[in-house]
Amino acid sequence: MAQRRRKRVAVVQCYGGCRAKEKVPLEERKGNCEEILAFYPAGVSECRWGCLGGGSCVEVCRPGAVRINGQGIAEVDREKCAGCGLCVKACPRKLIRLTFPEYNIYPACVNEDPGAQTRKECDTGCIACGICVKNCPVDAIGIQNDHAVIDEEKCISCGMCAVKCPRGTIRDYNGIFTTREEQG
Image 1 (cartoon, rainbow, N blue to C red):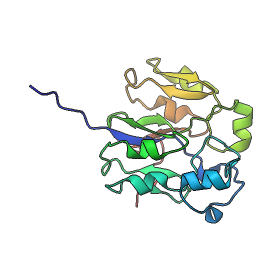
Image 2 (image 1 turned 60 degrees about the horizontal axis):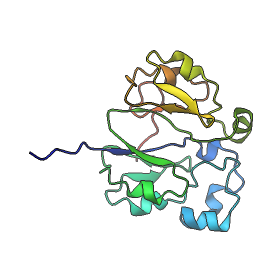
Image 3 (image 1 turned 120 degrees about the horizontal axis):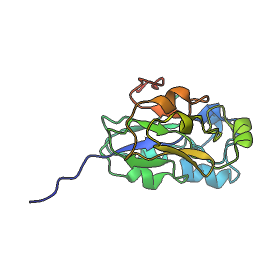
Image 4 (image 1 turned 30 degrees about the vertical axis):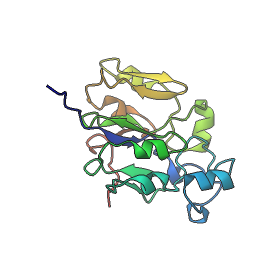
């Protein structure tokens, strides 16, 4: 008997967008993410790890599940997402990953700079303070490369990390523990 594949969905690991200190305003950026990187090799914001907002992921998403939101960052509508992974491959910053729909808590930052520097660059970047680690009742979260990482196999989606995160970096897709961005 053939094993049935579990559905997967994409998640964007950046919540910065215009919350990051901009070097190039969103309205001045032209082209997709690859073109933006070619034209601005030093990046478009102080955070060199964040979403470029050029929509390379949007271009390849056949079901139309990815869009660039009002903050200038990619956002996935999980209801529409087919889990194909094309957006993962299209992102030059490797900010998009596939996960299972039941894992609705995720860190929306992969910045590897020290906390003090991140604090200067982005209002929502992970500063590796460890508050999420201390508040996780099942030891499912840790700090790696100066940002929070959740072990989804251990996570029980209790939301304590999201509630306690002082910068709102750990997000809850369902909007129960953190405010959900408007889809549209």
